[in-house]
Image (cartoon, rainbow, N blue to C red; front, side, top):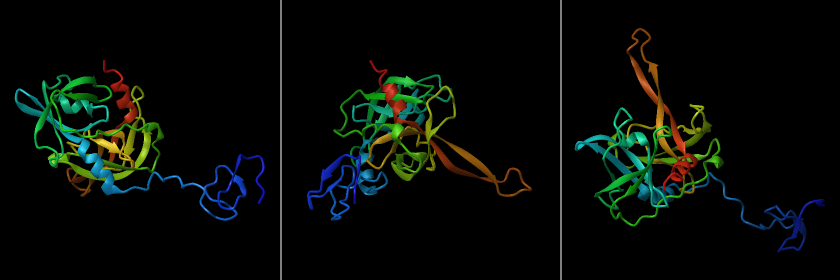
Length: 254
């Protein structure tokens, strides 16, 4: 075998000169370096064990009554990200004066007060900061959502329909779905999202945050062509705000 016009190195096993980028010597077949890790090689149990500790339930109240609830995620910088609509009333004009978070029950069953330090109603992102000491937990790192590809395996943990700390998994259907030309693209997945999932993290195979669950599209499928009111709802498209959009809002904190 002759390799021309390429950077070369010597095989540490047989001494032959081989291209610098190969992982296996073409002469002796020994591995020269570890194969690159596939983004879809993962240990689900390990990912969930890491991620679930940083996922929180978010409860917003107005006049002592719960006006909204959802999910959130403790980040490695100490801030908590969630959706803006999770901490606001139905009109999207009033931010709840009282917002509390709760961690996974194995960590603590207490609720901890937080305050809003950054808010973008347009992007549907709210950044929260605990106002009291919280359990010592490693927050999750934000990944670069520009590197997300169609078909990547992804995971969510949240509180759908008050079914606290529920896990789901799927794949990225479109990493840059545009629904509004004035806003950043969102990540489309095939994970079904329900009320309460909002604000929870979209996690990659390295237990890093690539997005934040925000809404889903529900299709009504007729079950009886003679009865227009007879249908079932199919939820198969979930949309997530990208981690880079979250990073953009974090930069606004002073």
